[in-house]
Image (cartoon, rainbow, N blue to C red):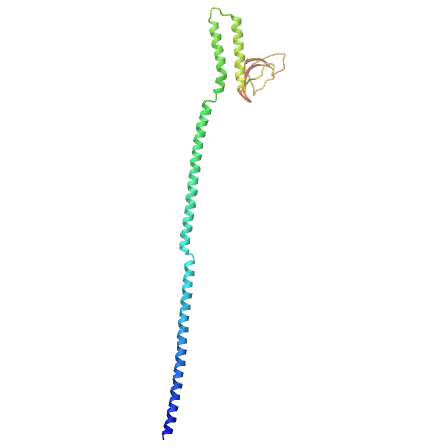
Length: 214
């Protein structure tokens, strides 16, 4: 009887030991599953964080639009300021040019006046000499001829020259016929210069008034 009890006790111990091993294995499997699930959650969290970082690095379209608008506004303001400065410079240049042009017109005859002043001085001297008791007609005439020569030289210095007329063929661009006369000269020949004509460079400022053969 005691031997049977011993066998039964041994069987029970083996069964309990086997059950404990199964429970331990199941617990280990569950623990491994929980650890794997936890690691998976950690990996998922890391991936989400990386995705958020990448999203933060991606430019915001609205922000980019505002930046582009600000850049265009700066360029527009710079171009506007440059245009205003150019307009102001152009207006200043125009005003200066107008003032300079007015001054040039105002003093355009300055050189001619300077050249004529000595002629006027000589006329004054000639008249003063003519009014003196010791006036000499011959000397006065010589003085007048000298003044005439000086006057012509002053005018020639300004580009003024006499128009040839006497003995020339009538030229309507340089001559003005006041009368005609029968003559042994060919028709259209200038017989007499009634008034001297002048031209300034290539422009006729007064035609020579002449008498022409018929």
